[in-house]
Amino acid sequence: MRRPAWTRCISRSWLIFVNDAPEAPLPLAFELKPLYPNPFNGAVNISFTLPRASGVSLKVFDVLGREVGEIASGVKQAGLHNTQWNCAECAAGIYLFKLDAAGQTFVQKAAYVK
Image (cartoon, rainbow, N blue to C red):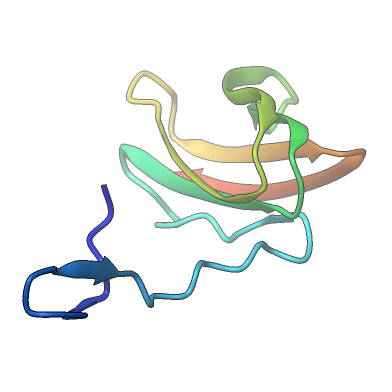
């Protein structure tokens, strides 16, 4: 349960919690945010936004185009999504992160250093 931004006393016998914190607005566009840290050692943080519920596929490829992993798939709700990819068994090198959502494709690269 989210705590209210502040409380307001309506009367002496009742305490009512009022949440006056604004809701986070929905994003206006599909976006794959910059990966961080980049270069990474161990794990990389991935964030993407969806302006509406959409089918999503987030995959990782090596520079030869081989799929290394699938991070997310299926229908995701509108909003900001955060996830992390950890590939301790992977070789050091450049990896491509490909997000497919609602007919759009976004690709970012990150360097994995050991």
